[in-house]
Length: 471
Image (cartoon, rainbow, N blue to C red; front, top):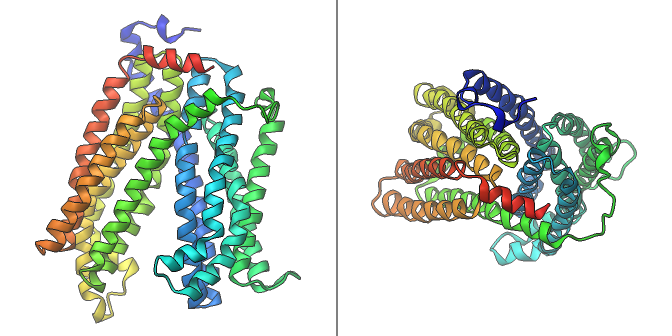
C-alpha cells in the first residue's frame, strides 16, 4: 500500500483523489449534521410540551434552558478539541495515545462541570439579579435542579461522540440520538403530566426527562464502544483515574480558544437582537425570523466543519501536506457552493420563506414581513460568510490551530457590534445596517481563515513534532 510520501506530486493532485476526499467528507458530514437535527428535535419537543403547561411555564422553561445552554455551550467548545487531537493520533498511527486523550477528555469534562454546576444550582438567584421575574426564576430553578443531573452525562456523551467522529463512525451517535428523541418524548409525557403512573411534576418533569435521556444516550454510546470488535481494543476505561497533565493541558489549550470564539459569536448575535429590539416590535420579529432561517440551514455547514476537523486531522497526523490541504479546501468549496445556493433562495424567494412564519392574511403582519424580506436579503451574505468561516474554522481545528483564529474572530466581533450600533441605531439606518455590520466583517474573517489554513497546511513539521511529543 502506498503512503502519501510514496505518491508522486502529480498523483497526489489527481482529480480521483479529490473526488474520493469529497465522498469521504460528505459520508462523514451527513450523520454529523443529522445528529444536530436530532438534538434540535429534542429541544423542539421540550418547548412544545412546556407550552402545554401554560404560557408561564413555557416562559420559565425557555429562560432557564437558554441559561443552561450557554454554560453547556462553553463546555462543549473546550471539549471539541478531543476530535482533532484523536484524529491526528489516528493519522500518525499513535494508537497508544488515544486512550489517554479520551481519558483526559472525561477529566476535563468533570472539571468543567464543577463551575457550570455551581452556576446552575444558583441560577434562580442569578436570573433575579439580572432583572428577570422572580416567579419565572423560581420555576426555572426547579427545572434546572434536575438538568444539573444531566450535565456530566451530556458532556461525557459529547466526548464519546468526538471519539467516534475521529474514527469516522458517527452513525452510532446518530442512531442513539434518534432513539433519544422517542425516549425524551415519552419521559416528558410521563413526568410532566403524570402519565404511566409517574408523578405530575410540571416543568421540573422536563428536567427529569432530560436527565433520563442524556444518561441513556451516554451509556448506550459507551456500551457500543466497549463491545464493538474494532473499538474495544482501546480498553477506554482502563486506568481511568490516572491523570495525564500534558494531555489535559493540550485539550484545554486547543479547546479554550474554540469555546471563546463560539461564545463571542453567540454573544454578538444576542447583543444584535437587543439592538434591533430598540427599533420596535416589527423589526425584532423580522430579525428573529431571519436568524431562525439561517440557523436551521447552518446544520449542513456545521456537519462539514466537524467532518473537516477529522479529515484534516487524519491527514495532518500522517504528515500528508497535500492531503491536509485537499481535505480542508474541498470542505470549504462544498460549503461555499451549498451556501451560495441558499443565498440565491434567500434573495429570490425570501417572501415565501418569511410567510412560513407570518400569516400574510393578517394586515398587522405586513410591516414585519417587509422588514424580514429585506433582512433576509442581507442575511444571504451573512449565511455565505458564516458557512465558509465555520467550515474553515473546522479545518484549522484539524491542525489544532485555534489561538490565532480566536484572536482574529474576537477582532471581527469587536468591530461588528459597535458598527451595528453606530450605523443601525445612532445614524438611524435600521435593521438592514445591523445585518450589514455583521455580514461584511464576517466575510473578511472567512477570507483570513482561508489564508491562515493555506499557510498552516503547507508546513506540518511543527505540528508533527508537537503531537508526537504528547503521545
